[in-house]
Length: 229
Image (cartoon, rainbow, N blue to C red; front, side):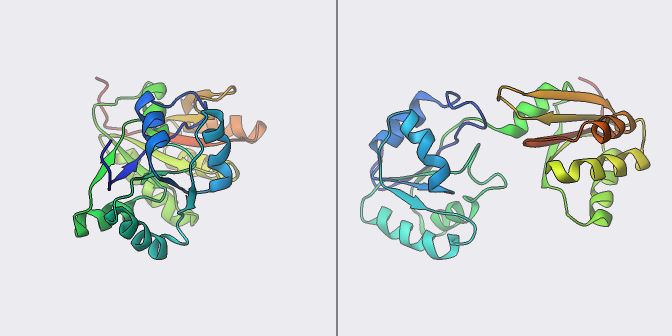
């Protein structure tokens, strides 16, 4: 392991054992671990017997905390960064840290690991030779409709994060735009109650009206012009 460097480490998206040996080794050797939520990360670290000083690093303190961490690394410390789940920087803190490292020529390393986006893509059964990830859909219905229409009109598979309380509204929009569109709702990935609901937009809208969704959700939309590989 390199001293005086950052390590961006993906963490499990549901199953605590979905973490690489290299990730565990590095977290045992670094001087400190920056966490999106120290209360959330502590049980995972304790589960794997890792006891290191934890530093809070989230969207509300990134601007202030990143320069402090940069200075610590310049002084020779090695610091790991983890988020609540998955790859740092994907709809999570991490982007600003990497940008600052590039600007100031501070060493950093990105480890491979779990990603809800890729799990949902492969599990959906939709074409995966060309795809795009749109992050969280807008809370504004009109903007959501524009984004979903563009996804339907494209030649790619599109993935979005969506909250359970907004999923029914989003499926209603899809059903209005293109009732026969192929859609997959990937829910609770890698967890005990993982499910992949694949059907037309109209059918899934009806299903989730009768069975309100719970848990973490990735919405996968098959573009109308997408070609199956």
